[in-house]
Amino acid sequence: MAVRDVLKMGDARLLRRAEEIRVFDTPELHALLADMRDTMHALDGVGLAAPQIGVNLRVVIFGVQRNPRYPDADEVPQTVLINPVITPMSGATEDGWEGCLSVPGMRGLVPRYTRLRYQGRDEYGALIDRTVGAFHARVVQHECDHLDGILYPMRIRDLRQFGFSGVLFPEQNVMDE
Ligand code: NI
Image (cartoon, rainbow, N blue to C red):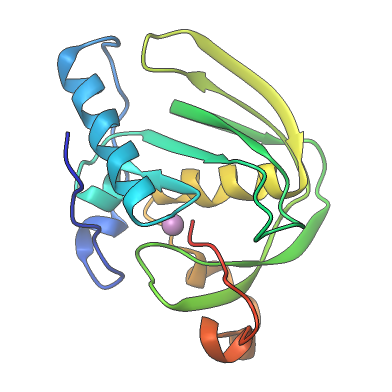
């Protein structure tokens, strides 16, 4: 287990389509997840995708505990999601501020589907099938985008709504995803 370096925007490895996991519950997959958890917790992130540590596989983790520092953030269960499939429940979207461990120190206003179903597997191969909304849905979309080589700045509609966290939100401690 180790905290791994997180690739930063500009690294071509963040722009690839990641590959499906074919075999579950292997020592290699468990070791990858241990490194991803260590890295996400060390950097205080709410999510991490394997490509962000240079591993080109369709594996993401995310989760948010209720935290008094972020009273408006919903609780999101700690989740391992592999080979995810996202199905929006409608075309409705909403704008929200996002950050990313691969784009440190920045925030941007990003439109995301408000409500969606996501399906996939955990590290043991067990099926996951949830219908979620709001912040949970936003986190899932952000992390799964990493598996298709998409970073959140590519989805910002108005680049005037993109900038340095400390300038945009001088009063707040904001999260990276
Ligand atoms: Ni990210």
